[in-house]
Image (cartoon, rainbow, N blue to C red; front, side):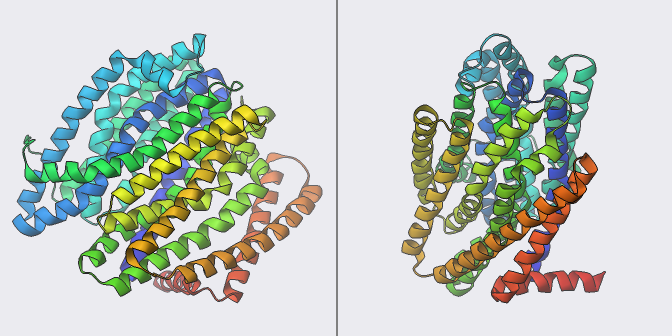
Length: 515
């Protein structure tokens, strides 16, 4: 586990840098345009190519890694590079076709993603999307380079690949304020190309070289397409849920899409920082143990992964619920992002945070099933979750007054239900794997987080009275409150003697000794 832990920590550090810059992008957009029709249109336009290809790209990466290993093992490095280029070129061809079709039918595509857009907002969304959708080929080849680097044990560069993308969007936002909002999509499309260019030199160092080779009859390409199918459907469910949320949000008050997006970005920060880092490193290890039929170590590994996610995510989700307003205020409330936008975003954040543990465990569980070469179970459960999310979205918005909060709560509820179903399916598939230990860790984490919440709320309330208002004072108040809560949570977990804490402490000790 030491090698895995080192890789995971390195990826977390890289992801932290990328996520901070990503937040800088959101903060810049919020400051420039707040929760307005321009931000709504731009966010939808950015989301469309991401939704179209993120599902495909993630699926390709999931299937690419084991097949690359198979080709390399059987036929050597040259054959593996040839296989990589076949996938690379096939993806370029497919993406160019998708981009051309998308550019032709842009108004229809935008209506699918934002049913309630009309007038000037619709006009801007169509313009932004038509330009940005042409960047889909760049997004596709970026995912191929990411998978190649990961299979060659380079996790840091893929973790940093969004840095040029976010930096160029920030520049375009700043320029748009002084010129015109219509330059926004150009920064985004250049940023998509930047993601690929950034990774390419490191891929070359790891043995990649471009070959103009395409063979749609290749057995490994066919095998990859067979594996990708169920994975694609399963991953696409999340993207479809995003489409449904944004489509319904577009029918609510102006700024609803922006508020939902900003809150989701905060939630995704945790997912990208911790969950994706853990799953990206654990997945190859689980695949190897599954292939070797090493059930004992396989079970230990998934229990450790589940428990680690629980220990990290539970306190963050509880903290986000009780401190949602000051967090959103400090991060976003400036310029055009006013108190109304802060209120809307903080409400969405609270209800997203309820399902944060569901989002985290769902990702890890999906990787467990994929390592067992079972791609159908996550797909089926994902479809159930999608149906539930749509039903709850409509119910909460139409029959209650929850509005924006209802959309976030529906997403959280469907994620929690999916996790419960996946746990049941996993136990049926591999038998007892240590579920009681995971449940024990969950209960201890919940109790510790509730005690943390009491202390954090008490400290924040009293420090607010002492320091008063002002950005610096509010940052100090929030920081000290979070620090006191983290201290209480850490002490409680240690008192409860949670095994996984020792793993974290030992890893930190080793790092300190090296320093």
